[in-house]
Image 1 (cartoon, one colour):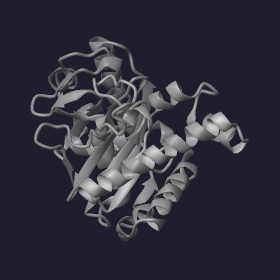
Image 2 (cartoon, one colour):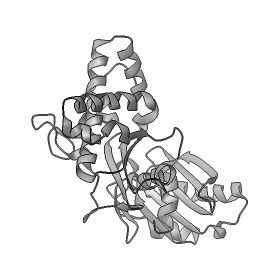
Image 3 (cartoon, helix red, strand yellow):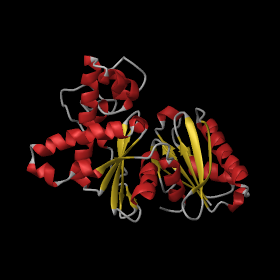
Length: 299
């Protein structure tokens, strides 16, 4: 069995993959804040998996971790994981010492991209872009079955492409970044009528003009992210995941509608079949944890 651990800001989710790639065991627990707590929760998750699967920990073939922040894959060091209170944590070495096994570490969005490709694209698609709509916005790219990270590891950071030079200041230091309009944090800034994207869509459906405006802006900018990924990478599929994807087909259907509207007035965009390339990650599928398990064996 291969183990994958998805360390998020609030929860740590671990899975054990059987030899056929199916999830044989799964465990979830709260993530603590700070290096010691993060290591404790990751170790506890792997030990719980071993107990659930009924195998000794040393029988796990590989162990991989997906985590937010800047990851040095060669060393397994994590930097700038602000929501976890981590700065220059040698996660791979320290967790490996606790578990007595080598541990590979990858950025969480890249891990989720690999997991999504395993679930939806392996054997049917040569390339895939995974569009993560969470607190922020970023993409992971899988080309030829392998994660494409770019020369400096920032491939897919499309959330920080400015789309409105006169727009609000982004934490990255630029103005009007795509992430400010198409993410959970952007939604929270733009609308005060509820706690979730589901609340927003329900209010818009009920005719709240403010909710309608925020919903339409969100959907248009998600569509813009899809267009951007296709025009730069030309993947077979764009899979939407992350917290905002909990709306499932309701969100993707609205995005497809925007893309179809653009295609109706542009022969160039019509040629690209953008609406047909977009799909949503299956609800409840632990993409980042599954992808981390694949990273553990060297993706």
